[in-house]
Length: 205
Ligand code: GAR
Image 1 (cartoon, rainbow, N blue to C red):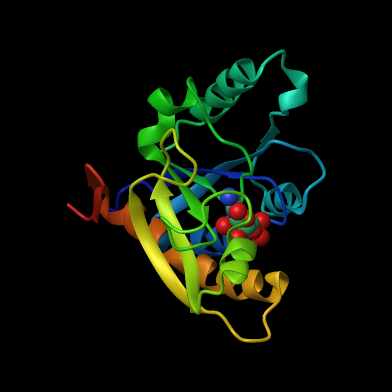
Image 2 (cartoon, rainbow, N blue to C red):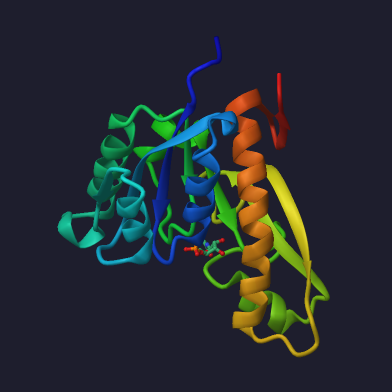
């Protein structure tokens, strides 16, 4: 008998193309994972619409509905925890998780960032890489911690920077690699498990 699929909760803030790649992968039972909920920090985004079209439950936890960032973080933790995830994927989720979230769910939460960590952390990875003039950039999947894009690295993919790139063209090229990295790595985490030893992450038993 095959094991039950791993339960994924995916958090988004925007277009949700990385989420879509995971939804598409999960349609194959052999992938070994199922998106059980999609959460967001804002309404009316394509990421939520993608989840609804796939018949996946959604929830929204907006900072402005709480008296403090700490209360928001606690509410987010409760919402995500209620779905009993095996793995939480921050896929373009533009908020830092905090003091309630990290002890409860940090160990099982990965975030995807559109740069090669430790270079260019923060909200503008593609822009900062282009401005710096690097010839190679990419994307990083990491286990969240209390820093900004500083957690232990699970996977990375490189992408060339072309002479005529704009921030938009570079980010689109990164996102192609990012979706493939996410699908491949999340699938392996779901099927094979993972261990974290300091900064070293290993997939499989
Ligand atoms: C992705 O490139 C992701 O790495 C980035 O937002 C994009 C979301 O795309 N996240 C960050 O920059 C977080 N610091 P999507 O909504 O189409 O999946």
